[in-house]
Amino acid sequence: MFQAAIGHEYANVDLVGKVVDRHFGSTALDRRTAVPLLEKFASSEGTTQLVRVLSCLQQRGLELDVYLASTALVACRRSSDSSTALDILQEMTARHVELNTITYGAAVSACASGGEWARALGLLDKM
Image (cartoon, rainbow, N blue to C red; front, side, top):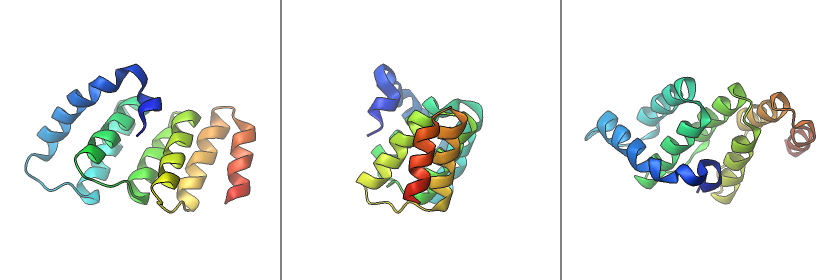
């Protein structure tokens, strides 16, 4: 799960897990509490940390859904990270999470701003 995007730094998920545990404490993990955390990492740390947090949330039982994925994909768009965006789309498909216009649009924008025009056009064809 997202290991390709994390690469050799996968061990840092434990460190991110400690931050997540500190942030959530005994609060139940749900989309309502997780999306703001993802948004914070997306705006301050870039997609590498964002993917770590997403993986950490999934390890703690929060299933990937369209809201979490959309938050991550918007971060990919902002940082022109087409590779991570495509990994997230692939993960969504593998987990049978419905892709919508927001997820496709953010992934198309990430690909286009990263210079991956052929991939962006390919995603547009799938919409």
